[in-house]
Amino acid sequence: MLKQRIEKLKETNGFKFDLNKIKNFEAKCEVDNRIQDIKNEYIGFIEKTLSEYLVVSQLKNEIEILQQKHKKTSSNLHEMVKRLERKKAAVLILEKQNFLLNKFYDFYKENLGFEMKRLKGGGNEEQSEILFSFNHINKNKPLDTFTFILVLNGKTYSVKDCSAHIQEMDKLLAKLNKTDDLSNFVIQTRKNFCSIAGTT
Image 1 (cartoon, helix red, strand yellow):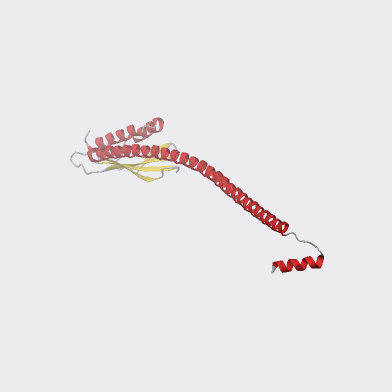
Image 2 (tube, one colour):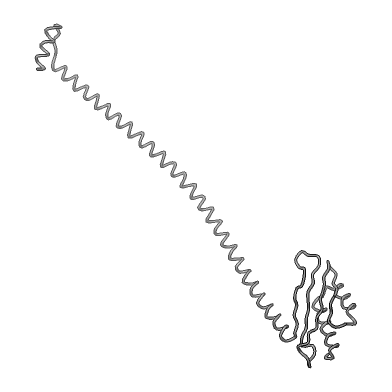
């Protein structure tokens, strides 16, 4: 059928067809098409590879940023752990000191009948009041309690509500305000209570 068409074409145009040339042309077209397909595949491969390279580069940058953040966070965490350990050590020391102070306070309370209680103030307040109480003053009546309230107003000490009249209280207060030696003041006040109770 193809031959018939070719023959018809030859007759109509007076043109001679060379079947070998046509076949060569068709083969060349096929090769050109195949080359174009290969070029398209190659371009697609390059575009895909470039796209993947860009994604990998972006991921590398993100990884570097995350590693830097991790390094900084690790460093900060390490510093925080060190600070926490120092604070724990300080707390342990304070707890030990507090325990010893409580034991010391309990010893004084049980053996000397000495007790202190904050009534008012402290911190940033201008006036503070502390109740001092003593037992074991009178050997015959060890449960009898002698008390006074020490008032600190600014930097000046005074006494109120003293359970027994101490004649030299003004002298003791003057010395306390001059020297700021509270322990000596408490010792001297206790001695005065002992004198009043008749036991020196």
